[in-house]
Image 1 (cartoon, rainbow, N blue to C red):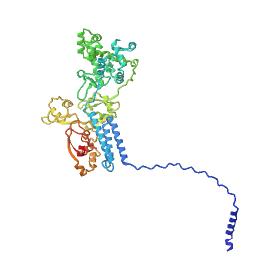
Image 2 (image 1 turned 90 degrees about the vertical axis):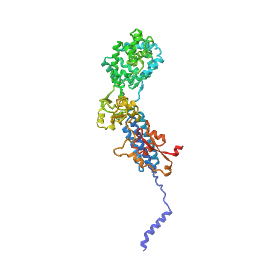
Image 3 (image 1 turned 30 degrees about the vertical axis):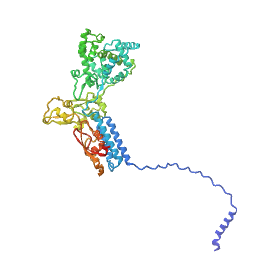
Image 4 (image 1 turned 90 degrees about the horizontal axis):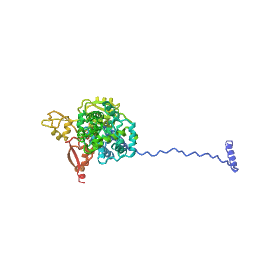
Length: 572
């Protein structure tokens, strides 16, 4: 037993003895402190807001629709607008339960309807496109009421030096009347002439080519600077139209077609050819280009009578006396000569020489009415580009009955337009409405019934206002919108989807709400839109469509709409 415990006791005694005489303490080495971790702590994640995400997505599609609409791409705009509504309608509870979705849905419908209204105001397929004021009116007004100031001393020297170095094929006298207009164009009318020079740069190669072929002085290519500032759609107060400002009668004499759909006075190339032939005719009458130019403005008959009365055959002698020609004709020739001087050497007179452009386009034959906005969409161009290439079109559509009308489209896009035209159905080309004549109906009676102009109805169908129509005859009604933007019809994949969804998902009115409602009927009048009617009754477009089970927003004169009017709101 003693041997069993001996070793542990000895160890304990040794340990006790050592504790009485402790050994010197050695400090433990200082260990470097580990740096505090800099790993970022993730911020608390906000709970997802699915409603906000839907609203953002719907707005993104709506904004795309607005961009497409600004280019005139109605089909793509409508698709984007439809999608913006579909996004909200596809919400788990629909678009009418969540207050935010309901409010946003109604707002989008109203905004889309407003865009449609503006699009129709801007022009349906049969609305006449706007014209621009003619430059000649402004310039002759300046010449009549604020004559040009006397030219400064340096102007004559500059023009004299220029004429010595620059060739002209129209005689240009170095007289005070011409010099005064050179001064005026450098000063008060500088901006006007600058704009005309810039616009003219893309037409001058064509004009000069035509004049060269017709044997007409090339200096006359600058006449449109004064007549229209090279604006093909210019319309004067006297109803002269186009770059060359032809009156109707003169244009007809030189083969320019004018009807309800088209006015070739605004076709730059055809009008230029007519102008060249007219100038040749006038020169043949007077054997003097200055008198020919005066006749272009005042008419050859007037100039001939003035020459006979004055007993002279020189323009400058004829116009030295105010008795024989009106002031606008007297000022017209020196004004054009001054414009020619500057246009042929613009840098000499402080103007920038605009780069010469060449109009490049493809021509596509079209034998029926096609909405220009469809053409823009199918060629990838903007509506402004298509209209600029085809200024002779008075409407937003090509002619209904015109054998082989040549439409101009941006270079390289002709084949794709031809391909689309070959496969497009009638409803894709434009929205045409026809009326089948009944017994005892006349043009006047049909126009009154349908709320259209008798003149427009007759001209759109190529007949006179007094023409007899027979039972069964189909007449085009010139008022149908070309392409309603909002749900213009049931889509192939989801027929009647929007209208049914709006009605099905609309909350049922409570008994109290029903008691507060007065149901009335509105008969659609000419020029009214769904948006305007909704505003008049202080309801939303979405409500109007829902109450009347409408698939779109298109209305016809005489349609009846059911409207639920709040008695409380009406009394306020």
